Image 1: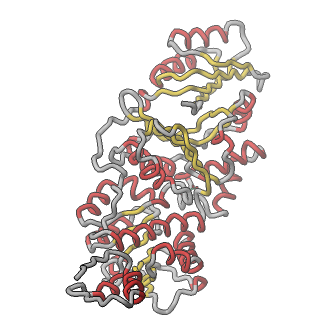
Image 2: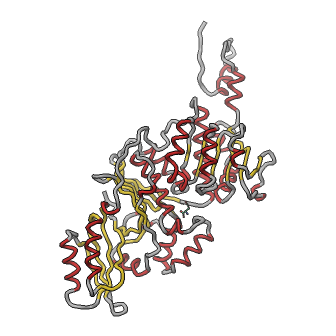
Image 3: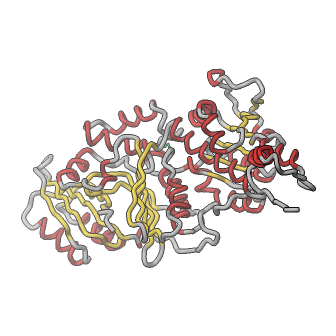
Length: 473
Ligand code: HSE
């Protein structure tokens, strides 16, 4: 007798056996009924939060149900929705249980995957912890929660052999987490620079293209549904710092360290500087930068001059883009919608699909890719702002007197700062704006030089300093 061991898709086993009429088969101790039942059992979701992203996820699951089933081979069934504000417009089937008691939902036996799309730290942290303890797989779009508490949450997930998938937490619909954790896994990543807050990019774009005022554009971004509940998260760079924290960990294999990100917002950027930068061939973008330097890692979010011929300088409106410099592949750029119902739901449901595949094909469902991309994290130091190195755009308002320019350039040269370009602008309100671009310099040196320039009696108002990156290799 020939013994065959089948370890393939169960439908195929049955089809195959049925088509091989000339074989008699004895399944011995293999319990096919049980196997089939386990294989076809739907994966059951609880969706927590019915805002823009939750609504988008439900819509996408419904619209693309057939396509998603073809990809996973399993039915995805929503069993629970957690919300305080039910949405009749979403026409959920009567079988979906709706409740505001999130803790109770995540303990239910008819939930395999918890999709958290409420945002905010509380109650999301406690609810996700509870879900992990009950062995649920997690999908979340919550960048603030992961950036600030991800180390504890990932540890708990590892201990309970479940995954926390978070593609939607960074750059919305752009699959940047998958790219960095999987697609670039053969590389050492040297640096990445991203436009990772759509609202901030929309504001800077409208200011540059239409000369619109900051507050007016922010209001429009809020109406479009892109801005955070607290818009200072967008304009002061906190949202971008949350996302950068996640990107840096999976780029360099370091723990999440949101508190060490140097963060500067765009609220002080004026139309005047946007124009002067443009005259010099640059665009001002609000970038999140993570760079491997000789002594550690630079983590910084700030307005940055970048050459206008860089592709990323031409990413406009609410769009996001991430430029990654990796040692084997070189620079690669990822562009797309960073917010909104459809793009964010696309990332959320892609994570659900990954988890469904893992549940189906691995023993414990814990997934095959480490949560933060590396099996072993290292404690590379994160550099302080003073230790970081960057180029500079400096704007000084000076009295129109002989020797002013010489005094300024002497201070820069004594500090060892190399000037790349210098431009004297037409007089404004009795003062002469002087714009200087410098080559990269350690920030502590620039601090000293600017303090000396600021102290010159002919200098009026606060010196404007905007960092500058050429973003070449
Ligand atoms: N407020 C964020 C943005 C939403 O403007 O990019 C997406 O994370």
